[in-house]
Length: 325
Length: 297
Image (cartoon, rainbow over all chains, first blue to last red; front, top):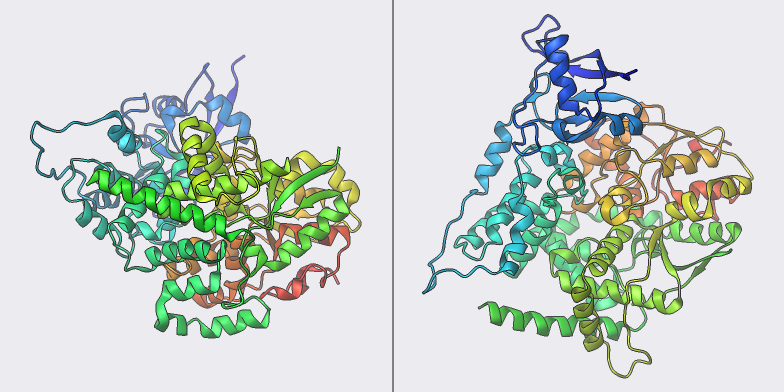
């Protein structure tokens, strides 16, 4: 006998009888072998409820239309088999992607998603072609390969912790797209791009929760793209913002004492004036013995080894730069 | 067989969250877990060095791993960010023998010739979180048997911390979609688990100084989420989550104009509480939010 599984689906229809409140509706689905969540939704729509709304097209994890929340995680409906999903969670709870405004049922407004894409100019601005044309090596391709695989399903933005709080945050999908061009050796507008996304609500506002990389159905690894963008931004000298200063303060702290010296890092990140604003909080911390001593900060043993590694790497980096031109 | 680890408390727990380090040592002693010092270990990069230079970051991590390898032990940390950073570095080094060689060469170049033994990492070290050790190798049954004072009065909300769970391909122990380890430890200690939406979400720590509004709002959201589900306290294996949930709770309260007063325990403290350690032994006076209401007095 085929298993029957209950689907608990979050419904919303601003024009419907329930008005503006979302509500839950249950449907029973008879399971076919290897059935996907999308197939179940299509079955419900066909047999039980033609008003159930969701986006879909290719059914093969290529078009990126059917990203929804499945048991609390952003996933492609067409790429998620029901049996293992049900076995893991013991239920099937389906709803629209988090962090987007819902238009109807599982259909969300992608306008902000596309506007963020536009913010990073998702096209190549070529610099002057060298004589004899561009030679793209395998290594050159490897650098941006993952970011080229994005199908713009929006799963990552739905999982993003920063975007949950700050709607204006550039987001993982647009960041991965930005890396696609910043990392391209033919790109001519690299610095301008990096400067733009180094501003507030840009790449430094990522909380590094790694949710984007975790949910991406195409292994784009947006979190890694954000790290690479930051690395390039620092290499370009775009470091006049708290995020960049914070990273550089850590690099300096490890070189100085081998460890993370939070008090000095705070001072270097915020600068003198904004650090003054932290004094009341610092005093409260001090009352609980929580303020690390900024001057008597103990260094690790064999610090020379760490400094030696820094030095050796700096030399190597200089040579790499020279080679790159 | 006795468990022994190269102990890497992480920078935060050597300073701001000293109480987590102090309690872990006491708890390990009671449980019979051997913790061996790594006095020469450097910072893992705290998820910030990757923004500056990946190769430098990998080499400094290889230095830590090489030290553990020389000790013949795996690493145990009580910091989830260290856990994530070190496991990510370890995966990159293990997946790419060419890269591993480059990193070892760079390490050899950097480390002065005068040092007794050349540092070299072969890729054999595992990096574990106290949580994994308790729920894994040590075992929940054995933990349960050591409990002196079951936490039967306590409704605890587990707060995993991003870096305990993600990226799962580098970490591997628990399932970010449906984690179980922290819940299992709370239950083994006799406590009741409070489930809530925010348990696998972010505390906001990484942007405390960069985007303070985002950070504090995020912290507030997680705290309220747990509080509204009836939690008496939250417990986290990550010191950075503790900093935001505890130290920044006052700011979070101001942000949402609501008193929250939710005690936040480090994982080792919750274990210590069940093992019979007292408040002073666990440095509970160092918390900004008083844990009194959760202590069953």
